[in-house]
Length: 174
Image 1 (cartoon, helix red, strand yellow):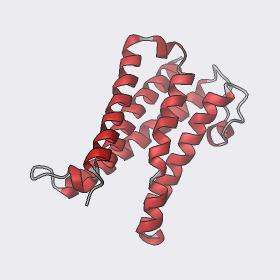
Image 2 (tube, rainbow, N blue to C red):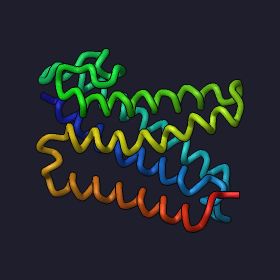
Image 3 (spheres, rainbow, N blue to C red):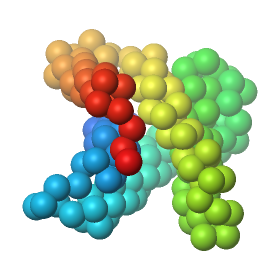
Image 4 (cartoon, rainbow, N blue to C red):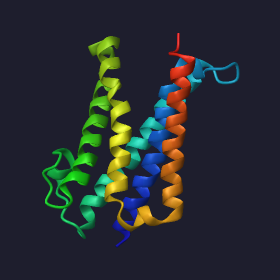
């Protein structure tokens, strides 16, 4: 029973942390830097927020598989749309996790693969976030009918939307 609560809580915390990390990426590390927050501090915040988000994603996946209330196998976590339980919505979660793993792997290998390759794969983070949010909304069950969960989702979506509009109107960082 505790795994059910832990999975939902970790999923919501993951969404908030991934939103924050995405917003720092959208804002551009160089553009988000100020006199009070130099570039290295913003980069460190982005990295640490991302690592914390990944930790909560791992907790979310682990508790979802261990819960046992619904049949989610380890293969379902990585192989999209193959699950017996809610194949579309769980498949979106697998797609988001696969994209996140690609971003993590290339970030760890950044020095070996080069900045251009790393940046090209890092753009997957922009696809990962909406897919993960759709996964949460579609698979959220009764959680998505709770006012505060809906408000949290709406706040995250609004923040990313505002960030994207600002980035598009202000321009890319130098």
